[in-house]
Image 1 (spheres, rainbow, N blue to C red):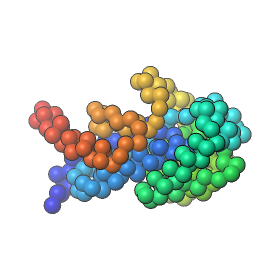
Image 2 (cartoon, rainbow, N blue to C red):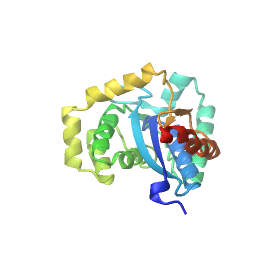
Image 3 (tube, rainbow, N blue to C red):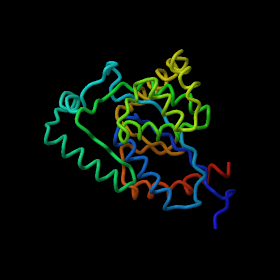
Image 4 (cartoon, helix red, strand yellow):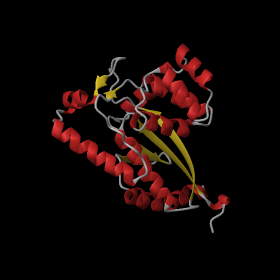
Length: 226
């Protein structure tokens, strides 16, 4: 049996948006891969901001209208995509509750809160709570009051979350980090980066992640000897 001291350090950087369905699908596939390799890795997750719609107005946009405008998606294609995501989510233990009138919203406030949560040691908990809030609970993750409530569900202080959003103290760092990823030619999410070496774009199957994870210990051996 592998002990903690024998576990391979694994840093996973994930660039994503909280209103991106493939981002939560990709994360669940990664977790499935990690679960298939119990005790192998000492995992450290780091979430990074990406806005699918940085110019989205405060009032948001009807999801179906948004998909038609941005991607040229027909109503039939939209229904098929939602059905596919719902089934895939169910197979991975995540609920997609698409509904009439669902709106795409601005996520800049959510990313500011995630930046703060990293320093509080609750970033992953908040990220997953935000995915659930938007896709499963029909909540507006652009609303400051909703975000404070989501933060509380993630084990954070709702009052402190409200203060973070009220004074915008992390707005500039989030903008800078978003720009840094754009300069690295990251224009679609999710993106997974393993140990700052291996970049995996998109919501890959768990088997794809498993094959990569099985390569990581051997790839690190030379560095361990330096």
